[in-house]
Length: 403
Ligand SMILES: [Zn+2]
Ligand SMILES: [Zn+2]
Image (cartoon, rainbow, N blue to C red):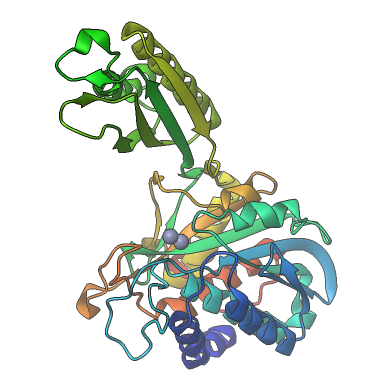
């Protein structure tokens, strides 16, 4: 039997779908989410929340102060789309050439608005405060970092934060939770091997950066296997190598770019120092100069285990324990990590895959799609997490097999 709140959420489905599709048709890239942000602020104002606009350019924050005192819990959605041409032939396909919501952020926004609509009608029952964070630029722009720097976690001070990502690897109806480490640091390495160019027929008169680059790539690929403990996680992938102009010319230099990923700061620092040592060693062995640049990306995303167990227990009460899984970390990245550096919380996954409907494509694919049944489900999961964290007991009906 559904509780009155579940019935209320089920009744929102068409509205949630309409919001998601409106955003889907009008995708905007990071820090340019002007219309999306206007749509969000408009609804939050309609729900009579306190609304702050213009944080991190296009960010919107909503605040509901409950009828009674208590903690402050925040939930977050990202709003940006990707520079990608949509391949789906659906009535609500992207109307902007070369831009697409192919990471499900349109769904994240709709879900958080659904949670806002729900709690705006339950204001008197809320002990404490609920903060909604709609952030720009998750896809590489680090909108989350900017919001944290601009004080989004203050006034009132946030005690716990939760976020979710739609997840095409997981069946609709299921929740995946990372107990502690969830996603990786997304650092970049840029290396230049600097030699001295010359004729390919007379290598002894040159210093060849091409041969050195070949050795360097092989050496780099021994770092994870030989310098990192087998039970730690790390990956280095060289994605770009550039140098040379013709078959018979030894070039002056070769540039090598790679992504460097790890799940904790200790491994991150080991990778950085080993990369530099190996670069220096190879350069010296070929009598070359080098330039080494290590650029930090998003930090590793580390959940608070206590908060992850709260998510598991709250979600199980709605969908049953059998649909809640603890899952391995992924070596992708997420700028939700910046919030978790300041405040305990948990970032979890909402399954949106449905093979019967052909919804099987991965993130960032031009055929990416979500099962829209995840929208009301996502609203319920966030509502249950907030309910449990603030101790509200709004859901009178709980699944008996939850524990
Ligand atoms: Zn993405
Ligand atoms: Zn994403």
